Length: 225
Length: 222
Image (cartoon, rainbow over all chains, first blue to last red; front, side):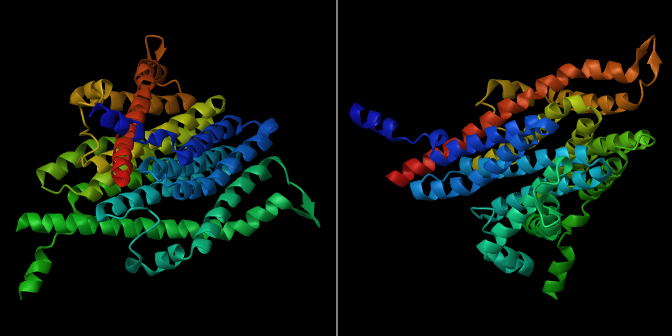
């Protein structure tokens, strides 16, 4: 009766208020705070704290979603977009701070956006549910990369640390350990990870384009028949 | 026999004419990027950048005329648009340092709103990001309904940033006491400001995605 329709309405979940999504909004807020202070030399501690806190919360929202049964497409997009935009904002600032390397940072930003976007699109067209579950049989390099969660996490973390440390290095050498500046050391150690991850992004981009072309070729071939 | 016949008639999507135009757009974009902070080369930068944007009008037509539309082409088109804007806005953040936060926010809004919109379209089954559910939002309805309005808004927006870039290096030709580049910036500023319409697009897309999510969660409970 009427009671059953009010019953229905009250049990309809409010996806906007899912815990992982609330965490997501906090991530976005922290990101914008970091952006606001990013070029202010007096505030680089605040910038980095907010930025890294935002990235740290990224580990929490996925778990919260699964534990509470509150996974959502909104949450997945919020997660992905915050990752991409945080990186983008930081890389923009690095292009400003390290002017001689501006073209490199421009290219990096473009590669990051394009490889992820193309990959996600290819997944949609071939029906995968998450951008992290790809067709593992199609590419041996990506297979190894995605197969091992620890490898995946370390690569992402190392990549983030490279750019974060590079930002910090502009303002300070950081704590000194036996004659070595900490920030510089992190930059040097994580540089190979950043390079490797970029190579993987290119592979991912090409693999995604191939997947999309497979769908296109099929459509065109069927249309001719 | 039959299989070689099949293989020779299978189209090579990578070599579709509109996609070749797309690759040219990407090449021009990278050339523009390379010279973007070089004060001597700003003519080259803007020429390549605007040529890339101009070709954008052609690849769509070529695709339809030759029956060579493809998902690859659509993505190439969209991504080149986004990345060109991104690269230019990055440079503007460098040149106009005091406005860096503004350009950062603009870049992020541009990427996020288009990406979310495209994703929402996929989940609700639309074929092109320009064909949206027109009944759902009156503001977007008017924006997308009229192709001329849509084109003028996009062109005005692009011209704003291109002119702002040029203005850093030069006032440009002088018309009756008014610098051309500065005039374009001022005239196109309202168009750029109204690209805050991206926020509406973003919220509408989020809403569409939430509808799909709510549906899934409600069905799972039953």
